[in-house]
Image (cartoon, rainbow, N blue to C red; front, side, top):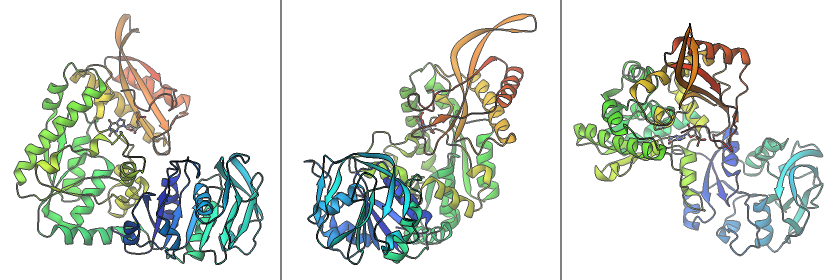
Length: 515
Ligand code: XMP
């Protein structure tokens, strides 16, 4: 672990908000990590948390398969804050009762503070709006506890033991709809757990650099620099630790956007002085993809080709002992979830059996960071802003944005349309407010007219979405004049594209990519 100061442990019982709790705590300057509720006591003790937060859960505490944590958690002598299910678990574990048939509360509710002296509610008005999401309610509090708050539908919305070392609240302070959520979490961290706010990108860089140096010694480390934010930040961080011992490889798979490979080489070789090899493998990738239309098959071919090329390149560094990967915290949490690893591990993080085959150990310097923290670390490392603020770009690249079979001609059309769209988004100052934007070539041709001639050409779709994490998304309400301008430029400047459509689907039911 790269953090040496106070750490908060969040035990995950399966709530959709667990990640959010960690983010909020870190936003307050305190390091937090998530472990599944099934974590062994020894693991929890080793983590040595300053305080523990119990997350919510879709389960009912009395369900036969209801998730539990090691009972010793409650006697470790560390402050505990239970949220929603966490509160009910405290009650169930310590002799209270939960009523399954109580009135349900979903959405906004009014919180009424009963115990004006409760440290958790310091500076919280007597009445405020909170976000509830529960079926069961607490009906009897455990002995030694008292009521600290109630809500419109639940007489017991907050409880605490005498010295406020074990606290439960029925609502979710981590969601923005809870007006005073930030203050409540801050009260828990600083007034109850006495945490220090010492979590920042600079500290992270310093301790991670020291850790990498100690681990690597004088060994050689290799890294495939894709041009995405994560691998860029990871390699600059490792470079800061070990300099020329880091050997980066940028593979052009022929599915990058216009000028992308050149920019990666320029930024990292010239600007950062990173030892970077460039390999143009576009023919290999495009040959293997010829005639393939199924997106899953495209992904598999690209993944396999990537491993093949990287393995070939890595032969140059036979003594290498480590491989850098840009895994970030949401990927880690996904694979640690107590419900089991998710089936959707991102393909660009999945370098197949390469590390085993080549006997390489992984260095994942961003494993503990959320995306916005990765960006902040990147800024603190001096990576240019226009690189840091880039939209996400899928591992299989433009292959999933040419619907149907992939040809060089279609890729060129797509690159031209894409670069116009992105350039205009930047110049109209719409890029930063859009979560992701791109163009898609459709496998249909429609009739058009140019000059006096009838044409029969491809359709290009513009896709732009707003989102927080890509899990759900809405189509971006881009101004009509902007869309008109982009459509006009594409039709005039890109040969072979005469019809432009704008995608107005949200996710769900659609996805962000068209595939
Ligand atoms: P969807 O299309 O599933 O996309 O709504 C959600 C986010 O994931 C990206 N995406 C991918 N990223 N490999 C990746 O690395 C893939 O195969 C892949 N498919 C989708 C997509 O661009 C969006 O940001």
